Length: 259
Image: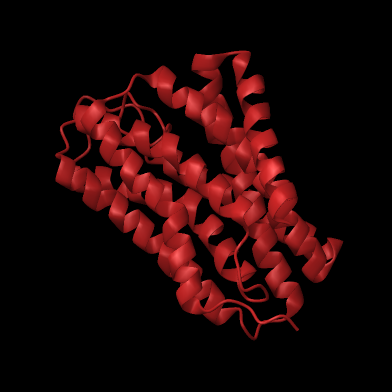
């Protein structure tokens, strides 16, 4: 059996994949980019995410446990994301990527307090990032190196959410340091998820590893369909298909080169 990576590897690679969100949030808060700019990134990242789902997460799950566990984990991840996303919506956080509202939905006249806003954004961003980070930890169990395409797709896909939320939070009155702290906590949670997945899954049955990997795939697809593509389409319209296709092609080439 091929010797896999270590928990330290999982920590490092998950951090590399997720740190772009912190950098993007800080830049968004400093530069306040227009919504169209973030939409272009969103459209491109939709293709990356679909490629990540097809060529890495679901393929690995299929190789590990077969079609049964792969589809089981996939639909569990998809349904879980839908349910949790609905819970967030009921709290008034309808558009986490919106640059107009700081990632916390349509602000009411009273507005939410700073603590509630920060926790809502934290939960929403973690909902996207944790399944992706778990997939990194699981993939390192049997492989010494994580897939370059996985890291690239996750890192690039985090940029538009970070940019939009950083800009919106800044417009809502948050300080730069506060925005940096919020996103740092999100990244920390995702890194912990990757390390815990690597440690706890080491002795887990192969079928369970497959279900866990596919679970991340289902969550990624749900996020792409419910959040990334709709937000991108509002500003890019028909170009969302071209930009998304370009993102898919880039990720596909990375897969071909590094596999």
